[in-house]
Length: 581
View 1: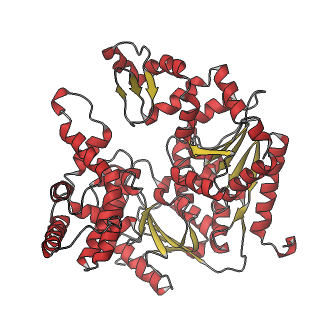
View 2: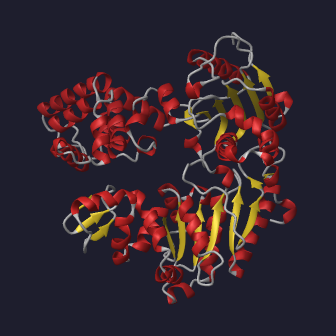
View 3: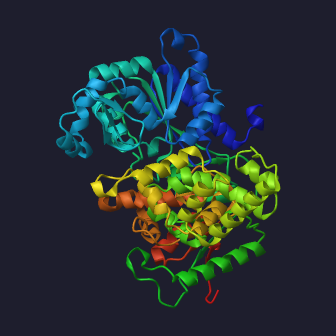
């Protein structure tokens, strides 16, 4: 395809990738700033393939590999698949990669570990670490006679401390001549600072390539923008996701990284609704201050959805996502309000990282739905595909009795009731790994005053939750709900997106962010972090749709905030909702 036939986005993408190749060839470390929809992962995979082709024989001869560090397991799996599991690439999450680096430095780990804040008291109780082996497998801190098990949160501080060791740095550089980091902006800030201090610009250092976008940093521990004299900055000025109507808004929001679209002729729409005409009382408590009363917000949402339907929106869950602020707000809307308070990490339930949640959502719920629809083959398929020996009428009666009782508990009982039923009747059987977790919980002696492992304390709390909340969570996770959180859709895209912007968390005040955006180059230092946190989440939300974007502001907006909205989205798109709606 000649350049004449290529889209503006394709031309911009090729220019950025060519700059990446130039850096890889010259040995310079670089940073690719890839805005929303730019094809960041595509560029990263292209860089990996370039290196594998160029160094196909050199790397094995020198016993070296290319390091590719990702922020999540999902990203790791995608990159591994898209590079055909090339053995020249070591692709893993930050923590897993770092542990592979430091696990062989046992003597140094034994020296560093007792100095960490979380470990000093533990060693005061049991005495010196001595020759115990340091391991990272259980996921919680524990000291045994011959071993010490570290926590997930210990891996990076240990790695940072080891970066002070010249031998460690030399071995790192010898083993991995090139290190590519995915979603750099969300990578741990202290870890990145150590890389900047100990590696970038140094003679014995790997070549680093950072792929990401600091405007899409929405996690608290991430480093955000990276600046260093040894880094070549490359902007990828392409957007393969959204229509011009949306990209034009993003470009006004972010003029320093203007994006080119793939199809300039595509038609779409942008609409902004605000609630300043509400004359009744607004919420006044803490982080809800200035927002509409909950019941009014629901009414406004329904009214806007009806208006959007009239404008041609398909509001089915497969076509449209309604983005809300946090999982706690979303959970209340969706019917699983207890879960955010039980799990330390939202990913435990939102990404099914908890084993019990995964079993309920992936196996038990589909089986219960199939049984209720009298689709018995699908029921056993959901439970693992193995149909048990049902040879007599008594077998059928036993299964029917167990499933009927399970459906009752599913509707009326707690999670603990469902678990106890599965453990007792064993139709269906609880997986062995979950059975063992519950045995560990049963055997844990709370009277000894020992810290209960997180997986057990969460299971203990989960037992008291109404199982109906698991049903609601399953509906949400399996796509039967149009709702989502702004945090949960980073990296995702949808045909249409409706963003509900309001209060509900003290970390976010979008009215204030819009006010500060009037002069974004002179935000007061003490408000800079809050401004960027709000701006980034707003940008991520607004950049998800392919074709249609709508926003509803349920919090009251100042004149300055409205001016920013008109500047970014156009005066003609901003509409005040009349009350009653």
